[in-house]
Length: 327
Image (cartoon, rainbow, N blue to C red; front, side):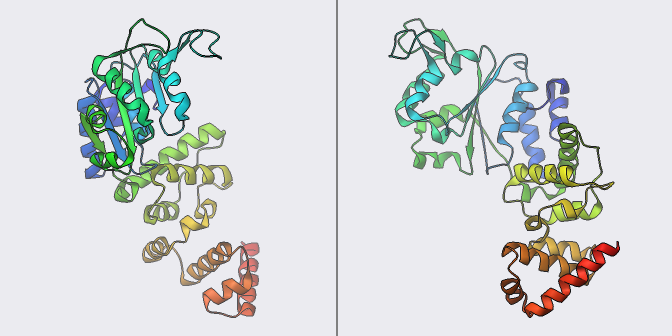
């Protein structure tokens, strides 16, 4: 979760979401208007694009920051347990109910309720949840005493237009209640100008988390990261940088610590070569090693893909090995 020490208000929010991308600037401007307004918000976007972070940022920068942030992963709770997890239950409601148990709705206590991946809400529970949102109160299973729901509600959905949620068995009336304001997050491939800043931030965070020295990212590394299309979005970038921080022993984070599938996609190679970062020989070496890696080290298969003989590939690898040892 974004650090509470970042403070409250629009300036704190802008610090959490520094961006050079016009589309994401528009997102931040909308978030600024929502910090202290209790309308229900639906955050959409591809997997890994930062929906959780947006929900948490709205919480920690708003007036409810001192209260709990309660996340419900709607896609991971078994349908037969969802109702008791949400509402809680009274002692004796069913065989294993040995004592009263508050549910997630009760534990919010004036904070933020985050419904992550609302497409996973069981169909049988949606009408009950709709009534809770409309009436702002609920009862535990087996109980009769109404309990007030005092919460800011934020929901998320992956890679779907909100109105298409109906095809995923989400009631239209529930969707409309949850999406008073909808925020669509752009994928990382549309935020190329933000990649370097994000990578540097992830590197700082990873160094602190893993007790590693803080190292700058080499220009070549940043160029490669910016050229890659990031199908896993921000989450994938954070993972790749995390790996580099853990594996790097030098004075800066270099391409050698990045996974080859990230380094050596055709578009990343072309972008790096065109910027004069590699010689033609280095480009050949990196591509050949990536092909070898992709076929599990099978020299014959790699040579066939590369259009050379296996003997030639063996000789090249020997030459590359001598060059590495000479450094």
